[in-house]
Image 1 (cartoon, one colour):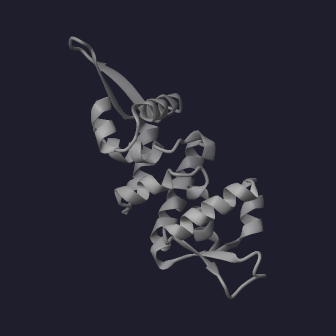
Image 2: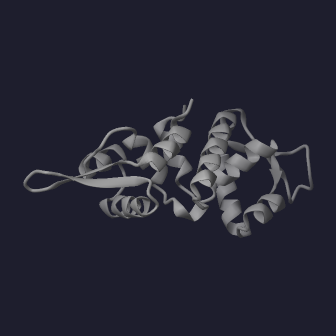
Image 3: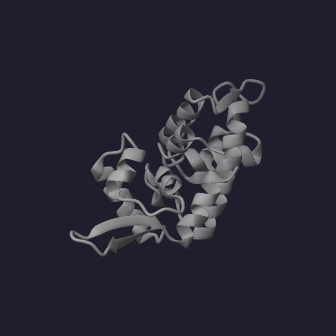
Length: 178
């Protein structure tokens, strides 16, 4: 099971989850192959791989390839995270979600909602240091993709609550699976 810090890191870049899933699935990959596979710029891929190295999830494999184009593999710490990323990518594919369809706080939001309905302030406290604007945009986007639902409690003033739809629960299961 991924901890909250790992889930938050997975959302820090658009390409973190797809690259980790590909490294796990292929047992390593070359820089050029990853760039071609996802159609991303060299700069974006280099930044993503640098993040993965800083977190200790991926390492250059010095035994293979030309020194300017090293092959990247998952570290021992990255193996479990890579397997989780494979599950997340499989579920995203089933739901028809592209890498750009999920913002930075999407996976932490899905993980923190679980089966409960929560208030905006409660979500913001759970996802600290998210800003209200970032959380609001993430919720709106996820409502548009039918991942999160909004309902109003019948009180005065009306109290909006947020919870996961069936699609959202499927995504949450892939994020939280052991």
